[in-house]
Amino acid sequence: MKFLNVGFGNMVAVDRVISIVSPDSAPIKRLVQSAKDDSRVIDVTCGRRARAVIITDSEHVILSAIATETIANRLDSGVADEGEQELDELTDVEE
Image 1: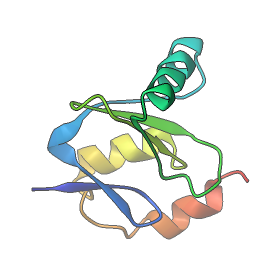
Image 2: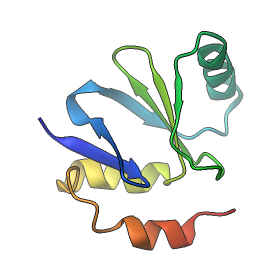
Image 3: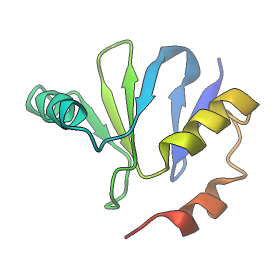
Image 4: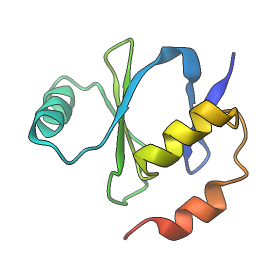
């Protein structure tokens, strides 16, 4: 089983990921709020602004402080189970 590093040492099983989207649009904000109401949100931002929303096949919604493009690149490039780039990404996160 491969895992995707979503920031701060947190991992998500690659085969459970359905989509990775930006949290800026109104429909995604409604989806996140609905998931919060149903206790299906997993917030791994460590207090930072959410820059990516990961939707899983179990309908859980994961909020990450790592950019959507970065997570997608990790998924495509095969560094899904490695955390080497995390330090570089943390310096790009807005507080």
